[in-house]
Image 1 (tube, helix red, strand yellow):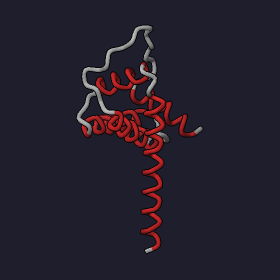
Image 2 (image 1 turned 90 degrees about the vertical axis):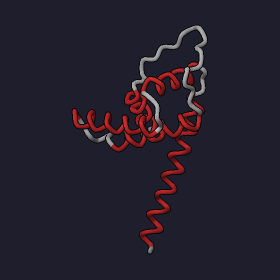
Image 3 (image 1 turned 120 degrees about the horizontal axis):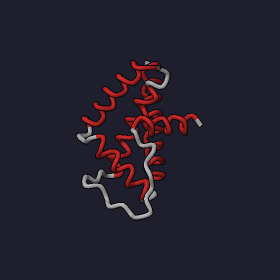
Image 4 (image 1 turned 60 degrees about the vertical axis):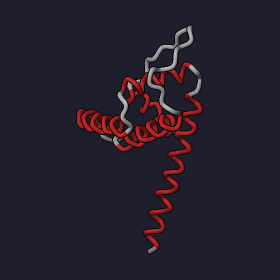
Length: 123
Protein backbone atom coordinates (compact mmCIF):
# COMPACT_ATOMS: atom_id res chain seq x y z
CA UNK A 1 0.00 0.00 0.00
CA UNK A 2 2.84 2.39 0.87
CA UNK A 3 4.46 1.67 -2.47
CA UNK A 4 1.20 2.43 -4.28
CA UNK A 5 0.94 5.78 -2.47
CA UNK A 6 4.56 6.57 -3.29
CA UNK A 7 4.07 5.54 -6.93
CA UNK A 8 1.04 7.82 -7.22
CA UNK A 9 3.14 10.58 -5.66
CA UNK A 10 5.82 9.83 -8.23
CA UNK A 11 3.31 10.25 -11.03
CA UNK A 12 2.34 13.58 -9.56
CA UNK A 13 6.01 14.54 -9.23
CA UNK A 14 6.61 13.75 -12.88
CA UNK A 15 3.53 15.67 -13.96
CA UNK A 16 2.00 12.59 -15.52
CA UNK A 17 -1.44 12.69 -13.96
CA UNK A 18 -3.97 14.00 -16.39
CA UNK A 19 -2.69 12.27 -19.49
CA UNK A 20 -5.67 11.42 -21.59
CA UNK A 21 -5.90 8.26 -23.60
CA UNK A 22 -7.01 8.91 -27.11
CA UNK A 23 -8.98 6.47 -29.18
CA UNK A 24 -6.33 6.51 -31.91
CA UNK A 25 -3.02 4.78 -31.55
CA UNK A 26 -0.17 7.12 -30.70
CA UNK A 27 3.02 7.24 -32.69
CA UNK A 28 6.17 6.46 -30.70
CA UNK A 29 7.94 9.51 -29.30
CA UNK A 30 10.59 11.10 -31.47
CA UNK A 31 13.17 10.27 -28.78
CA UNK A 32 12.30 6.74 -27.68
CA UNK A 33 13.89 5.72 -24.39
CA UNK A 34 14.68 2.05 -23.79
CA UNK A 35 12.59 0.28 -21.18
CA UNK A 36 15.73 -0.22 -19.06
CA UNK A 37 16.56 3.47 -19.13
CA UNK A 38 12.99 4.40 -18.26
CA UNK A 39 13.06 1.94 -15.34
CA UNK A 40 16.25 3.58 -14.02
CA UNK A 41 14.85 7.10 -14.39
CA UNK A 42 11.61 6.20 -12.63
CA UNK A 43 13.48 4.33 -9.86
CA UNK A 44 15.65 7.40 -9.24
CA UNK A 45 12.54 9.58 -9.22
CA UNK A 46 10.81 7.20 -6.83
CA UNK A 47 13.76 7.35 -4.43
CA UNK A 48 13.80 11.15 -4.70
CA UNK A 49 10.11 11.39 -3.96
CA UNK A 50 10.40 9.02 -0.99
CA UNK A 51 13.29 11.08 0.41
CA UNK A 52 11.19 14.25 0.41
CA UNK A 53 7.86 12.66 1.28
CA UNK A 54 7.86 14.08 4.82
CA UNK A 55 9.04 17.54 3.75
CA UNK A 56 6.33 20.12 3.20
CA UNK A 57 5.70 23.35 1.42
CA UNK A 58 7.91 25.45 -0.79
CA UNK A 59 11.10 23.86 0.56
CA UNK A 60 9.96 20.48 -0.74
CA UNK A 61 8.96 21.98 -4.08
CA UNK A 62 12.24 23.81 -4.66
CA UNK A 63 14.49 20.97 -3.49
CA UNK A 64 12.47 18.36 -5.39
CA UNK A 65 12.63 20.44 -8.55
CA UNK A 66 16.39 20.83 -8.26
CA UNK A 67 16.91 17.10 -7.75
CA UNK A 68 14.41 16.24 -10.50
CA UNK A 69 16.43 18.42 -12.85
CA UNK A 70 19.59 16.59 -11.76
CA UNK A 71 17.95 13.27 -12.63
CA UNK A 72 16.99 14.60 -16.06
CA UNK A 73 20.54 15.92 -16.54
CA UNK A 74 22.02 12.60 -15.41
CA UNK A 75 20.14 10.81 -18.19
CA UNK A 76 20.47 13.73 -20.62
CA UNK A 77 16.76 14.03 -21.35
CA UNK A 78 14.12 16.70 -20.97
CA UNK A 79 10.94 16.51 -18.93
CA UNK A 80 9.05 16.58 -22.22
CA UNK A 81 10.90 13.49 -23.54
CA UNK A 82 10.20 11.65 -20.27
CA UNK A 83 6.51 12.63 -20.33
CA UNK A 84 6.13 11.54 -23.97
CA UNK A 85 7.75 8.16 -23.29
CA UNK A 86 5.60 7.46 -20.24
CA UNK A 87 2.44 8.58 -22.04
CA UNK A 88 3.27 6.39 -25.06
CA UNK A 89 3.90 3.37 -22.84
CA UNK A 90 0.58 3.93 -21.08
CA UNK A 91 -1.04 3.97 -24.50
CA UNK A 92 0.79 0.75 -25.38
CA UNK A 93 -0.31 -0.72 -22.01
CA UNK A 94 3.32 -1.32 -21.07
CA UNK A 95 3.57 0.77 -17.91
CA UNK A 96 2.61 -2.18 -15.68
CA UNK A 97 5.69 -4.01 -16.93
CA UNK A 98 7.83 -0.89 -16.47
CA UNK A 99 6.43 -0.38 -12.97
CA UNK A 100 7.10 -4.02 -12.01
CA UNK A 101 10.67 -3.78 -13.30
CA UNK A 102 11.12 -0.53 -11.36
CA UNK A 103 9.90 -2.23 -8.17
CA UNK A 104 12.31 -5.14 -8.83
CA UNK A 105 15.13 -2.62 -9.18
CA UNK A 106 14.15 -0.84 -5.97
CA UNK A 107 13.97 -4.16 -4.11
CA UNK A 108 17.42 -5.08 -5.44
CA UNK A 109 18.85 -1.72 -4.35
CA UNK A 110 17.25 -2.02 -0.92
CA UNK A 111 18.62 -5.52 -0.43
CA UNK A 112 22.07 -4.50 -1.67
CA UNK A 113 22.20 -1.43 0.58
CA UNK A 114 20.89 -3.39 3.59
CA UNK A 115 23.42 -6.19 3.16
CA UNK A 116 26.24 -3.64 2.70
CA UNK A 117 25.16 -1.81 5.88
CA UNK A 118 25.02 -5.12 7.77
CA UNK A 119 28.48 -6.06 6.52
CA UNK A 120 29.95 -2.73 7.64
CA UNK A 121 28.22 -2.96 11.03
CA UNK A 122 29.74 -6.40 11.64
CA UNK A 123 33.29 -5.22 10.92
